[in-house]
Image (cartoon, rainbow, N blue to C red):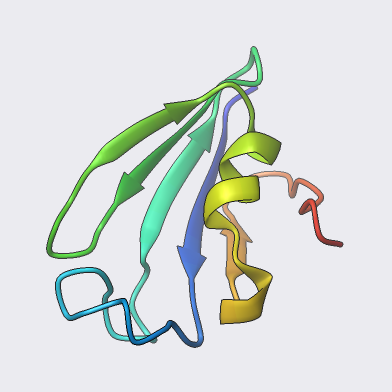
Length: 84
């Protein structure tokens, strides 16, 4: 079963310019976890990109950032976040 999610962040760092982030109320990226566990992220920021990861855990290990107040909203069944 495919699981879809959207990611929001409450804060970022001074490194993140207006090209690297959206407003905090807007999603930063969307993702999908495929039935084989592969995870794809689609950045919605002005500098858009798409990346593919071996797993959701790997993707969140790099882009999860609990220190930024990362909030993952699942549109299907939730998946446990690596830092929970």
